[in-house]
Image 1: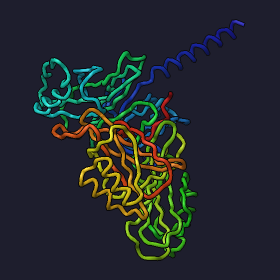
Image 2: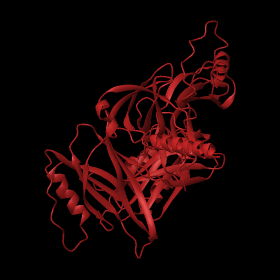
Image 3: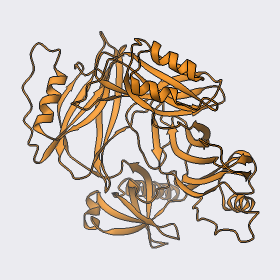
Image 4: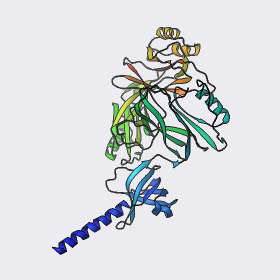
Length: 485
């Protein structure tokens, strides 16, 4: 009996020691430089716990533990526990967390308030004292007394000015969750925070300073909410208007066998097929889009954007319509593109091509937000007159080829401030045409009306049009898991 008790105690002590060893794993933070053929990650160590001091600035090869939930990609900045497996003589990463890309930069909040005269969502970088003076005039144009200008050394620092736009119903504020520098940009990661009911409408804003850097500043919205998009890089690997793919629709390709079969079908008409592109299906997915058989030249398809919204990844396929009748023949346009493999379901949307440059911020006399369409030159001319469009806008509206296309006018209504209405994207689902718009702060010297119209031209459709307002430009890589509501 005594021997059994001693063995049990010994087992408990051994388990405790193992647990302590696991809990005491050193942590490492760094950039994935490359991914080796055997799956090893070449990691450039940036920082870590005390045990990692000697490794800072060095490159080590690490491997993922079996069943790892996160698979990093080249260029990712990650944080993870690091253990050395004696049996395999290798470093293994555990509990991996993908961090915002880049080296963190220090910043200082100098103003965080709920009321300001700028009533639009915007984010700007102020780089000179003259720009600061103009910004201060805009900030406090309705205030009885302006606070003193902050003291900023613009030789070494810049000011980040971020505005949330009008908010009602909730007490809202802006929060910087991280500022990180990459080789291409300085990324400012923002989050919109809402809590209890507000006693009155507000226009929250945030001012912060940071060291001046040569790379451009990009504001990234990291708020987990509906209509929050995370864009990723998409790489075209094949396209053309000659193929043996005569099906209209899309196909998701998720392994090497599917890729080979699709490739053989596309180039079935060729005696010698092009070389099969390289795709890492552990980390990448391929979308194939075709437009069936066309009897006239000039039709094509492209994959313009891949983004995540809430719990799905959307692949936007754009159909290009010829502006003039091309040569007759037998055409089968297609495109094949690859992008980082998501952790959520994939949805295919068809983006509608906007023919020509859409108008932005044109003065009009419509005081309520909305959208109207014109499908004939006569209707377009009447709309231009009724809504008070200027000569340039009227000309663009009336020269549309209405045999195939339609024009849509989008109105801001009375916005009570100098911001510019911009059309970000137009796409079609089975039930509607979705027009995503944003209100962008105009340049400090640019004056715009408080009632504006924007216009886009696209192929004719009987589907209803729905307006949606987007927020700041959003970018992230790789695709993120769906945010928890």
